[in-house]
Amino acid sequence: MNARTTAGVATMLGSAASNQIGAAVGAHAFPFIGPAGVVAVRQVVAAAVLLPLARPDVRRFTWPQWWPTLLLAVVFATMNLSLYTAIDRIGLGLAVTLEFLGPLAVALAGSRTRLDLLCAVIACLGVYVLVLPGSSSDFLGIGLGLLAATCWAAYIVLNRVAGARLPGLQAPAVATSISAVLYLPVLLTLHHGGLGYALIAGLLSSAVPYAADLIVLRFVPPRLFGVFMSVHPVFAALAGVALLGQVLHVHHWAGIALVVMANALAVRSSRPRDERTIDAGRTLEGRAIAGG
Image (cartoon, helix red, strand yellow):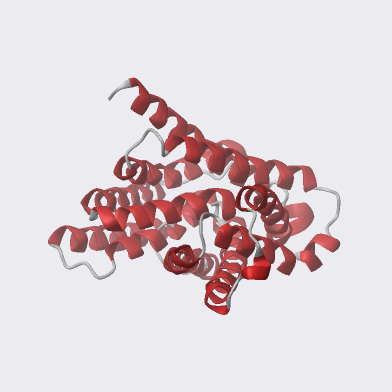
């Protein structure tokens, strides 16, 4: 590994740590403003980051450009709220790991290779080991984590459509702004307590990782970037332990390890034209737009 790649890997790890530490800090605001309040503030921060970069001229948007953008806004609003509510109910590590099933499903969709089938089996086994369904399981929290995964998968597909019709970051920038407007009623009723946590979460999970990823993609091959994305569930679990006191059992760590392994194998085995789409989707959504 040359110096540029080493620096890129270090930046990727720093970006992942910032993202998950931000999510953990945001969880400290839950008692004051709830998951919806944290999501509302984060959406405003994300819009503040993306709009100046994209500078979209919405007056020139046509309906074929508007409809995927509007659907993206709904996806963003739903994905963020479901993820942060899941974090509140089942913990950061479990929620983020379940959410990662979304891009993994997109990576495996339509594939019939034995390796991809193995990845799917490993992922399913990982989820079962992670959750170990029983009478004490929080099925609503688990369901919300899976809803966040579904939204992430929908984002990747919709971003593919919107990206073909709008240049640069215009679609996600407008969609994030619309999502922030949808949360306006929440913003207007927020109590000042906990806002500091939410703002820090927005910066650590939106602005910092987004800037880092833009730098990383100049030095690191897309496939390597996709593999390193797999560390996020691990970092989320560690942030949950260190900052939220969410101690995980052995079966939780085993489940996280299996999902991470499945994701890394899927990215390594993906075709070049697929990995660019998946990596771009993960970069934009997982950092500057939604977090988690």
